Length: 192
Image (cartoon, rainbow, N blue to C red; front, side, top):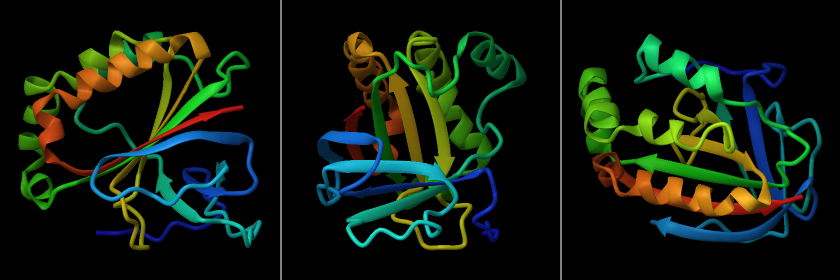
């Protein structure tokens, strides 16, 4: 069931590529499936982006923050204990990773997805190895009433010297059974 999310909802975020924005797009690569069109800058903000029209926007992606899924209370506590927030002054690098999973993933029950996500793939355990250096926020796209091209948008921020660790994190996650369900993924690297 999709819910209507309004612009003034602080859980709604938009990511707009075009000629303006705080973040310079350093690279944009399709990891799996179709790429996104290139653009020089990325703007991300609360709301759907309609409050500030931009005729130069090449694409806009939207997602909503939500409750934690597929993690136990203990796992969530472990994450919260060591993760740091976004917007740290030294975090001059960022990445936006939009992902769409296959229909086969969405036909699984929540319990089956948890089994693949954590028991087989150790997603949370892998992520913990890279905290607090890499901060992240996950946005769900399937919860929106609009038809979005991705299921998830993950926003990461880190210092420039932590980029090798970020690359290691992505390699570890992409080598898991969970990633066999990914049918489209784009890796967008940014700097400010």
